[in-house]
Image (tube, rainbow, N blue to C red; front, side):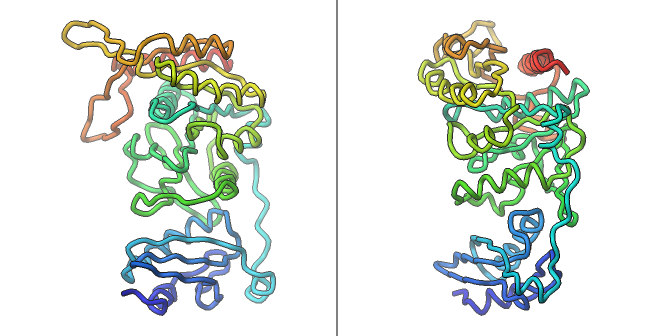
Length: 352
């Protein structure tokens, strides 16, 4: 059975990244709870909610698991002003132009991909839209903002993690798309148990702490529905464009209308509707089977006074073991060509 002292011993060599001193020396460990070999820690650090915290949490989880823990949960708070003054903690340096600044100045266009419910293929659309835009010579990034259900790294076959240098995070580049995801900062696919304010703080990190290139487009794979993250996006990026994903099923379209209504109320421009899983086409006969019915995309477009940009059939990319990416379609694949058409429509609508 793991003990509190063993946990503290494991943290003796873990340094607070901003102050460069041991967590134990700084008395940063404010709470230790152990139950069934599951360890929960509360840590006080110099600058919570920054790239430094992400760098630190990986080191802490690795150290505590090395001591025998099965799982590690972390909470963070700020060190007291007295401790910071004693150990030479200074103010954070002012950052240069952020991706939010670029969006406000019209240099980078944010494209939120959203849906009313899960299971409609929203993340697949996000990933393939981003890669298709990159194939057309655009500078593209993608934020996996579906913080509870992050899947973009797996879909794109990404195994490496972002580099953290000082206070800046450098995104992973895959298929000429810059990628950032909560999945990069979670050990062993652990569940995320956060309340709304922490989610908003993490999104701020992705916008302000990540060293993005001068992007033309930043695709946001939003969680389904109209919860905290979607609300944060609407308030942070009032000039964001939106693509709404639905299936042909009437219920999916009905629920997706709520996401569309939020976009309209917050004056986000709806670029259009993507009807995913529109049909199944037999390779043998070419006959189309409308597995989930018909009409959902058109009904949603009519209600939101928009249009159906593309209809994507059921299918699966051909797996390339040497360049593994289980959800990315090749450019010459039948469905890959549809995503290329989607990218063309997006470029035309945005005008750059």
